[in-house]
Length: 567
Ligand code: HAX
Image 1 (tube, protein in one colour):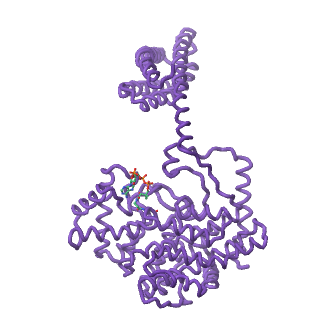
Image 2: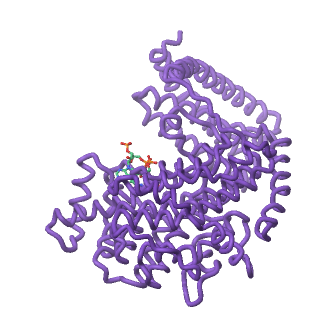
Image 3: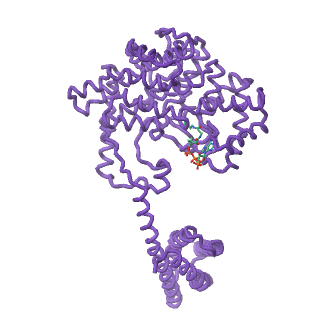
């Protein structure tokens, strides 16, 4: 067993112990709720998956094993004289959780090299397909055609214990990653070039070899592919590719089945296909304005034209991110350093200045900022990789590093079969009806709070007469804090839900009440329970009770009763 595999094996028990401890002692701790709109909205934001290889922060973007992209660009090994991180080093980090040291990278290189030979039948399978078949379909089929070589499936059939299945999972994952550049490059050669296969160069790294086998031997292209394959490698567990691989893998389908399935998801226009769509969209925009570089006014006009036609602006928005994608920033910095005068780069830069404002005015997208796909195509284009349909294949080659690392870990940790519960719209309608009925519970709570408020008022007067005000006022502020947090919010919730006509006035009174509470609390904290303070609190409660609770709230309760059919 290689050092790398031994090291991986040693990581398992401590991780398993942490998980066992969590499940045993904190198994009932609640992590996430789910609402009806989240169920219909693709379960956005529902925390229900585990993925250790990377985590996405809405504002900061992706971190691989806790490291930000700029940190890793600095820390990961490079080729001599190169500036871009080697994907082999990233793979080591993703799968082991540690930065590679000394010979680790050679270890990974050897693992890839030993497995890089692609059997002839894979090329024959690809050759039997029409040349104009989408390169993503070819990729998915190329991977699937290797399924017969799966050690995972073989050892499962032979009855190997499930707990040890991570070893053949690793074998297959390494095999896929090692072979991907050859398969992808051949798809490129047969679809766009003369169809002649170029053999790998044993002296080149994984990324450079991909360029070499595509027929591009240029140090700058090697560098940009290293960066591209580094940047697209992982995006936590919930994106369609990663989740698909994990879901399919949870049935103990082997890595070939699982990864091929993931690639079918990546092929979607809302996911990995967006990078090619960006360039198609920019080409159409240039055509529309008769070529050249459109100015910002024209760009804005074209964005509106696209949006008004009910179409998306590709490369902008994200399901999780709420700021500019750091992967976009890394590519932008590369372009600024290497080809700031490039026409396409200038258009991409103008889009960065114009699109977010337009999307904000348009008012739909939660995130108006660019994602990685807004930039990646233009970089490849600059280096004469101009076959747009192929861009997603490069994305897929890269993504293998992350999702297959996690596939191996899922087997290491004995991940169980994924099986969420589905329900029907009728079921949810039933739930909604119950919720409506529960409004009577809400009104009941509101009434109860009002009664409690009256009690507090009486107690305050008693406390005043017996001189025990300080202690009492502390309790009273506790009560008011809960009242403001819960009761007022509850009222506003129902008012909004049923379009209560006096909502604005009601809210104003709430704000006034909250402000008075705040000021009086501050006074108590600085001066203690003075007579003046007690009088002011009493006055505030009397005002709120008589003005607000007795009159407005009563009217509101009547209104709720009329809309909710609660007798
Ligand atoms: N242009 C126009 N409208 C957009 C938009 C965009 N770029 N991004 C979001 N919206 C719209 C959505 O279509 C949605 O409209 P409806 O309510 O009418 O359905 C509304 O804004 C709210 O969407 P959201 O919550 O902000 O975004 P989602 O989480 O639903 O979707 C997407 C996230 C990335 C799919 C979305 O922003 C999009 O389609 N962007 C363009 C395609 C793209 O760049 N995809 C690549 C994403 C990165 C990636 O995964 N790469 O692999």
